[in-house]
Amino acid sequence: MTNEARPLPFFDEAAFRADFLTEIRDYGLTDEDLGGWSEAELTQLFYTARDHGLDPGRLGTWMRELGDSDAVWERWMQVQRPPAGRDEDDEEEEDDDEEDDEEDDEDAPQDADEAQAEDEETGWAVVGELAQEWSHVWYQGSEHAWLRYAWSALHEAGLTAVGEPVDRAEAVARLLALTKLYRVFHAYAHETEHVEEWQDMGDQVCGPEPLVPAFVWGQLSERRGFASYSDGDGDELPDEFAKVLVWHYAPEVAKALLDKLGENFLFASLWASSSPAVRFPLNDRRYHEAVNEDPWEKMAAYDWTTNGMRLP
Image (tube, rainbow, N blue to C red; front, side, top):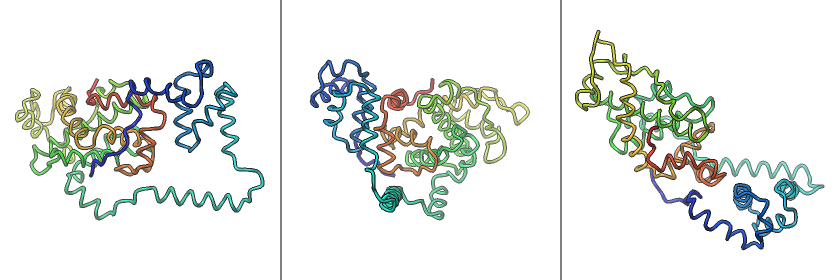
């Protein structure tokens, strides 16, 4: 896993507000021209124009002439439509070329033997079954693939040892915290639930593998000193025990993700994971889609991520 430099997303709000109106006035727009436009409409128009190769100066001309966002979008759609009389064969050939380009843009799937070896090395082979059980945010998203990717970052941080029973219990606790951080991100990003609903635990953490016996949880509690523990009948845990695990390990997990992936990579991967069949780490196309398209609607989730991923 690498942390190569890529362009920063448009989330520097102070700089954006300071520069944006100045920039669009460079295309000849006056205060009168801009009077009926909201900042959100202007943002969407100009950055969508750039993403699709349209000269913003041409967009500015349409805005002055038409003065209405619906009329501007209609003009744009007219320009985007293919000219009349084009052969259907030409259209099919162009579609094939676009499909080929899209396929070339995707990362090649990981070899099965290579993936198995990686899972053994990182400990995912031990905890991955629990991740499948605990991650139920999207019906057809890529959350399980994202959790595996995030787990490899925790492995780089030295947080995934599973050799000894107490080490394995700690790895399970970190996985539980990771799944809760994932839920909170998408509560901010897509309003999948209220941001505090992660506390409605209900996660089974005590039992035979891949869960952890109550006695081993007691050993971990005593070693880390983070919760009072009573083994009761041998299989009982305090009602709030799983929540205590998350509160204890979530800051450590969040810091490792931010340190190893970087704020922008982490945000982009989390955002993209709501889509099906996403491979991680993201290719350039998916990265730019995640950080550059419709930035205002992503602000709450981005702010939460860059402010340390603190649980509410």
